[in-house]
Amino acid sequence: MNYRHDTYLPGATWIVLLALAILFLPWLGETFYSSKGEPREAIVAMSMLQSGEWVLPVSYGTDLPFKPPFMAWLIAGLAWLFNGGVVNEYLSRLPSALAVIFMVMMGYRWAVRNRGTRFGMIFALVLATSFEVFRSGIICRLDMVLTACMVSGMLLLFDIGRETERISHTRWLRYLAVIALFTCATLTKGPIGVLLPCLAVGIYWLISGKRFFTTLGILVLVALLSMVLPALWYYEAYLRGGEDFYALMYEENIGRLTGTMSYESHENPIWYNFMTLAYGMLPWMLLMLMSLVCIGKASRRPLKPAGMFALVAAVVVVGFYCIPASKRSVYLLPAYPFICYGITSVIDSVETIKVNRVFAWIMAIIAVLAPLALAAMQIWPVKGVVVDTIPWWHYIILAITVSTGIAWFVNRHSPVGHSLVNVWAIYLAYAAVAQPAILNPRSDMSLVEKLRAMPDNTPMLSIDSWPYPRMYSINYYMNDRLRGVESLEKAADYPAGTVIFVTHKADTTGLSKNFSFHPALKRECDFRKPLGIAIRK
Image: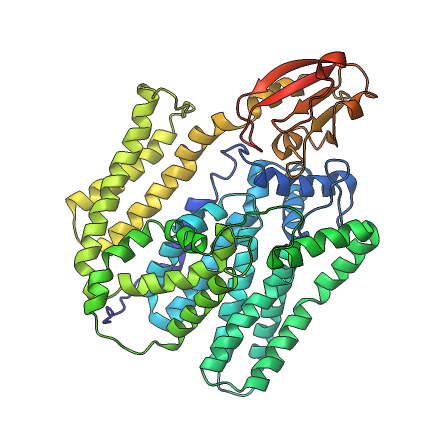
């Protein structure tokens, strides 16, 4: 495959950083929580700040956190520094946004060193605007923080492995940075945060000709040093949580890998991983499919070291996550930067010029039509589709997106550049305008506002059945006031006026005796099923 010559782009690093900052940072607080995943993470940080327990905080009265605390530490620290110790939507999502910016910039510098500035800019924007990466960068989930630490450490190890000079002070600093990143990854989601990156790097080093025992010794030492601080946390947490903590950590780390969990957790067939990769790489997967004919005609050349490393890393990550029965799209996030490297190679080749032009037309049309459709829904509501009224300044963002599409119609030069700008603008319109307009009406805030009008000392309980034991969204907005009970009979000792949330799986035996029942939500966030409220007479 023939690649284009590099071009001089003054201020390229600052352009990429500014584009990422505008895309990810300003809009994090615009959308309420509308699923159970985000508030579940935020509640752990909230519990830390309320209780002062930063090792193993308890939420919902008795619940231990499912994962190590690094993500919660970040959220709690930001809330303590910037918001008086109060966790909100913006601060809870900020670690993910900063993590994706950090990862993309690390990847950008890595790509520039190996393929030049033009390639690096394309790679950075392709990575940032791949659907799964973008989505994970604007929500309060630990997966992007984990991915950023893992991928950044792998890139540093790749650079270290290419150095031929004797061990220097700079190399030791890089090793320390790798250990710090893998330590944070392990404190985010357990030992997988260091073991999987070391496995991928080790296989690449062996393929590239490094000695087996040298490779094994270096990576084992890196892994052991990266697990020192996490081991201390595990020990302290075990002292506090005892056998309950041990059972939870064993199930989350070993049971999930071996398929021996006590409940079904995202169990899917192997093909599910490849399906999620296909839509997770949108819209660039569309360009890849269009380029298949061109790739077949391209001249074959041996992969350069960076290309070989990207191939090995992507195969190892995807292959590893084909083993567990539990499969989710976010598990594959560490493979996305390396897959994007391959996609960028296709985009930057001379053989795909015509395909790039067609793709530019498609993205330009979407950039024009999608904002106009959202604006039209404000004037002519669609039956069955509830969309919030958008403020006037949102129309400015929609106009920017439309303008980027029109720019391609007017000046049809540089299809790759126009495609990148249009995709960036489409995601900008989604994050700033479409997402809050669509998701906020689906949140639990209509009920939360009524609950907040009740006296602060009103007991609030939820009745659920495992494996759906908790209502994280309402609990977050009620400052972790909810407590779980197994049945209405268990709530009989609570005083009159006690509020009990009754989910679709709840045991409602005895409901009519001592409680008045009221329908509350047609679709609550955690289970996406109807929710009722029983009030103690």
